Length: 609
Image 1 (cartoon, rainbow, N blue to C red):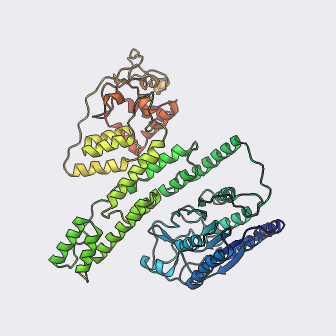
Image 2: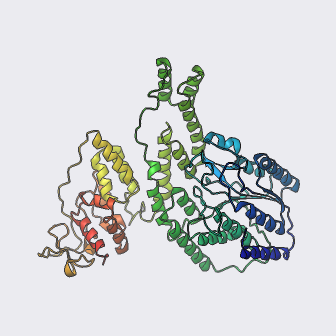
């Protein structure tokens, strides 16, 4: 049960709504709350949450059908009735579907779990659950102007026999035209436990925040959801972030009224910056690629957006890395030589038709599961690729990393990363003074093209904390296992400084007490850095390319600052990477300014003074 504060809050909401009067257009809603499950873990919050939402929606002009602890037949019947009610209401009607209870995702599809479901294997999910896409189809087929879907279903896998699904929570949905879709938690995450008491009561925070925000007159649904997100974010201590996607073609108000005064653009911009910064700070250390993509879709041009893009590039390592070669899945399977040869030819062909031919030729095929899995992967990839949605590609790669189209999917994702993310990071691919630059992806692609340990090590030396570090290290290990020798160190080369200084003979770190300081000359027994401060060194020009094969126009007579976009703050960030485990690997790699990386590491270790 809810406490007195919640009940009073709900009553105040209803009174406020009643005073507003009826709205003009037809409004139709279906609200479902499932908590008392027969074979799954029970939930305390969904039924009272559904009751609260039903009451608030009625007072904001909706004709509400409320179901609690509904079985599969009741849910399916009610969804069909919702479509009929919307068609009867006419094209200007608004449809709303709210669900609280268990939800599941499988292969990028979302499912709502009825209370009578007894799911013991993944292939039973679509049999005993209600597909969210069915709700979307019903709403869209009604051809009304506005539809709202609110899903309060982001919980851990509820069935003991099913085991944990990966990913958990709900998969991202792309809103259709005229539709607003919202989840209580970000895609692929579960709701936070322990708020307001009870099992999975965090879901209650989402419902109560919605109910409160719906009571504000003149507040559009977009502005309302920002308040809901902030409220849940605060209640969960940053552990849960509600998510939404919208393709509404106009403003929607639960309670029409006099809108609040429009703030000045500068105020709005600052508020958006503050919101984005606070949101990113709460999720930066734990967010995966799907959550970061969602953040960037909502906040593409803020002060923290580039930081989010860098985090996204690093977080995609698992999806971009091909799986390690494993055992042949056909080994040990009792198939005739004829069938085995036929299946091998299907694998070599890689076409759906060849796998279907194999299955048709051998009705009791030994390798049937492998063939059906490959057919499913290729058919799904065709749809995913045409969607152009990186989230769907990520979900595909998590489900089918070793399929015959896995490399194609990884190539698509890498190209998307280059075009839509890397290119937008400040200084990544931009020209400086009209001169072309070489991005991290260019370095890495050269290493892939050459297939040499030397080029992979050169990439690691230049980008010790880069996007493709894990892939490069894996490639180096594979090449070493194959017998390719490591690259010899480059011979030392002189580096011209913009303003050479006479070397200081004493072999000290530089600065007070041997401490490395930004503006004081160094003396470390290394001619490339001796006699110059860090500030002067970064204005120097290399005398040979930092990676073999780079055209002269890219590096010759250019300074380090041109290439790296360094200022003191950014240089400090780079220097601190050399104190990490990956960065220490890079300290041993040759650089056109021999010893400079160790100088930076010592400078960072002293606080970048």
